Length: 345
Image (cartoon, rainbow, N blue to C red; front, side, top):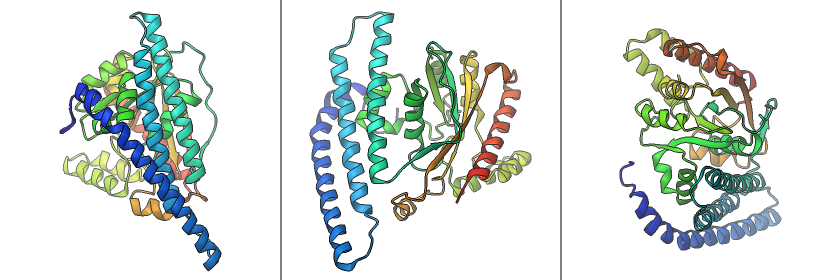
């Protein structure tokens, strides 16, 4: 458990009820800030005749919208709990489907708000065919870079692919009551590990992968953390200190990704041998690695998040951990090449 995070019963009985009125007050405050900032921007435009980027009202509107959607997740999850069906496989499937619909609805509104305020847009390099109902589970291995990529990929899994997203996240995200309640209901995996890739939490990931149902998609970030130039350079230095010179040279060539940590991926593949793999690359926002850079880039009028992905049947994967670790490195070389070919920054 993350240091300082109270046990789940305490969060449900104490923190969540406190959070509801607090979030309402904060949402109203951000809403007032957004209205005032928008009026000031309009006055500056009229008086000084200068165009403004409206960063304050955009971020304040997004913050108010997120808080309201977070409240809807908490209240909606509580309502579904009150209507919880009697135990049984059919009832359990209905319970899960209702939570997926709630998550899908919230994410659609979140991206609608982000599109209107931040001008955040997502483009697909090429479509991926939606599998029919009852398809085997899917293991999604994604690059981790830029603001909002986790939310975007969960949104695409839930809405575009029509799958139930099972996500591997940092345990600290359970401080967000909406994510805490809803994603725990969907049996997502919250790792206390700072890596996020879970090399020291393979048992948790194995159990998560083994429990995947048809139409589930497990989202995993093999790099373990968000790509930044500093982390990329630090990873190269770490590999050199460990005497892994060939891998360090390979990491130095792959400038747009961190070297993947194979432990979590291998554990999931071993626990769910029937799952196909979807490798995801994306670019467009990865260079925004600090709050100051994000602030200067707003609104994202000349930027979009471009996503490319390719699906690999499990039969195409090599057997054995050594071969699959090499295969993962090869896929990440392809991801790096894709990002280099499609990057506009």
